Each structure stands twice: as C-alpha cells, then as structure tokens.
Image (cartoon, rainbow, N blue to C red):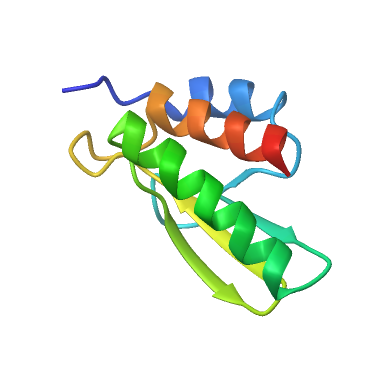
Length: 95
C-alpha cells in the first residue's frame, strides 16, 4: 500500500500544482477543468483514462458539456498519496 501524505505535505505540494485544492471534510484534492466544448473535454478524459489505467489509479470525475470536475484520493491508503499528485500533475500538463 502507498503511504498517505500528511495534510502539511499535501499543502506544500499543492503550491506547485496550479488550480488544485483540498476537498473540505475529506482527504482528497480537486480541480475543475474548463474546455472549449464537449469534444475537447471528452478527448481529454479519454487520454487521462488511458493514463490512469496504465498507472492503475483512477480518478473520480464529473463531466457536464465542457467542464470536468476531478477529485483525487487513493482509497486504499485513505487519502492523498504520491499517485494522486502525479495524476494531478499529468492532468495539468495535458490540459
């Protein structure tokens, strides 16, 4: 099992991850991504789904038209881990 990071560690790492923030009342991070249209949003989600499958680490997300709300937490570890931060960095990079 991957080690859950402390809230202090997560807060420090989030300073380098544009747009990501802690979820209130939960050990998770979240960001809302906006795209030009549904096709761009869905294309990005498809690319990220392939990345997630390769890493065996899958996001929680919600999509309406051109908006994708992502929440990341490693459920097996009970909170945010390096896997979540790596996924967040990849999502920012591919946006």
